[in-house]
Length: 583
Image 1 (cartoon, rainbow, N blue to C red):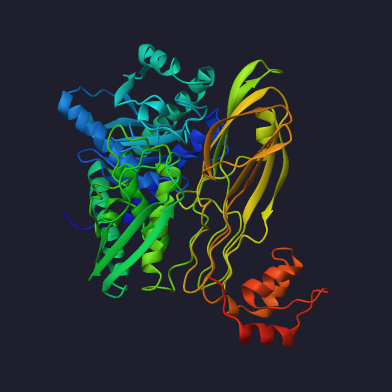
Image 2 (image 1 turned 45 degrees about the horizontal axis):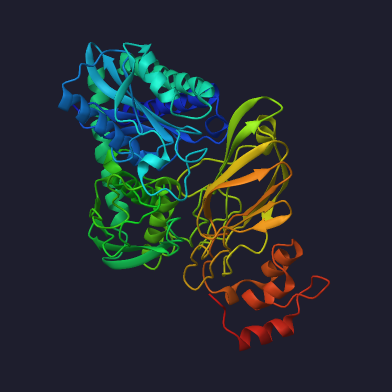
C-alpha cells in the first residue's frame, strides 16, 4: 500500500483537529458552570483504541490535559481489560481518580468508546472542571487537607452511561456527595453531548476517507511529530542543564518545596530527572505522576510551539519517575494543588534549566499560578447555594524578543478569568477593582508583564473563602540577569480588620459576611537580561503610564525620570555607572 499523499495527510490531520475543536465548542456552549462556559477550563481529544495514546486534541483545550487525558484513557482501558467489561455503543465512563491518570478531583473525565464498522475504532475523551466535588470546603481547593478523602468524591472508572442511558443509581451517588448538585446535571449532559458531537464528526471523516486510510494517516502523523520534536531537540547543545523552582509551602507545613530539575541532552533526546526534589508533603501540593509528566510535555510545547501535538511529540522525552518525592504522589496523599500550581512550578524548572542552553527560545518565568479562589455560601435573596470559582491571570516573563505580556493566562492552559459581569450576575458579589498590578513586572532588558489586582465585596449573606495560589513567598524567576517578578498577595478584610494568610497564598474556610472584602494581587513575570541594559526611553514610557514609580525606575533600572516625565540623562548615566542591578 503506497504512502499517503501530502494533501490528503494534511486534510486528515486538520479534520481530526476539527473534530476535537467542535467537541470543545459544544461543551462550552452547553455547560451550565461559568468555570467551563466562560473560563474554558475543559478539553476534548481522540485516543488510540489499544493503548490510549493521544491522536488529536482540541486547540481550545488546556495543554496540561494533553498528557493527563491520555493517562486517564489508559486507566479506563486497563479497567476494561482487567474486569473483562463489555463495551457497547453509547457507553461513557466517568473518572476523576488522581492516581489513575488524573489531576485534582474537580477535573472530571468522560471517556467513551467509539465504534465504526462494528468494531472499536478509538476512544473519545474530555475533561471538565466541576465547580465542586464535595470535600472540606466549597470548590474543592482545600489548602489544609492531609488526605485525599478530605478533598472530595473520588471516582474510579465506572460507566455513567450504559448504551446511551444515564445510570440513575451512579448519578444519585455523585449528586449526594457534592454541593450545588442541582446544577451539575447540566454540565454532565453538556460533557456527554460533546462526545456525541465527536462521534458524528469523526464518523463523517471516516466515511469520506475510509477507516484504513485514516489509520495510516494517524500512524504517519505520529511518526512525523516525533521526527519534528527530535529535530528541534537536536538544535540544543549536548550537555547537562540544571534548574529549580519552589512552591511556597504545602498549606500545612510553612516551608518551601523544591523542584530540582536535571535535563540531559544527547543527540535528539532529552532526559528529565527530578531526583533531589522535596519528599512527599503533608498538604495538598503533591503531584500525581500523570500531572508531573504532562507538565514536562507542556513545557516543551512552550519551547517548541510549532511541533504538532500527538503521542509522537513525547517520544523523544524520557522522564525518570521521581519516586520518593512530592512529584510522585501515592494514595492517600492530598493533591488538590497539583494541576493548577505544582504543574506550573515543574514547567518553570524546565525553563530555568534550558534558558542558558537556548536563550533565544526561552524566557523568564511567567506568573505561574492559576490564582484559584473559591467562595461558597447561600444567597439569601435567591434562596440557593452557590460556589463561585475565580481563575486570575498574571504577567508573562520577558524574552529575547521583547517584554512579557500582562494579565496572561496560566502556563498550563488557555483558561481565562470569567467576565466579572457574569460573576456579578450569578453570585452575590461586587468587583470593586480590577486593575494592573503596577510595579510587578520583573526588571530586565526586557521586563516582565504585570499581574492584576482585584477586590471582591460580598453583597449579602455569609460565605466561606478558600484559595490555593502560589508565588507568595518569592516572585517568578528572572532569566540571564533579570529580576524576579512581583509576588502574589491575598488579604481579607472582615469587619474592618485585615487578615493575611499565614501561608501567604494558601488558606481555607475563611468565613466572611456581607460587606467584607477579598483583595488579591497576582504575580508579575520575571525580567529577561540585565535591567541596566534596558532602553531608558522605554523606562520613561513605563513611568509615564504608571507601571513603575520614579523611585522604582531608578532602583530597578538605573534610570532617572524627572517630575515632568522627561529623562534625566546625566543622572541616568551616573546611576548606571555606579550601581549594579538588583536581580
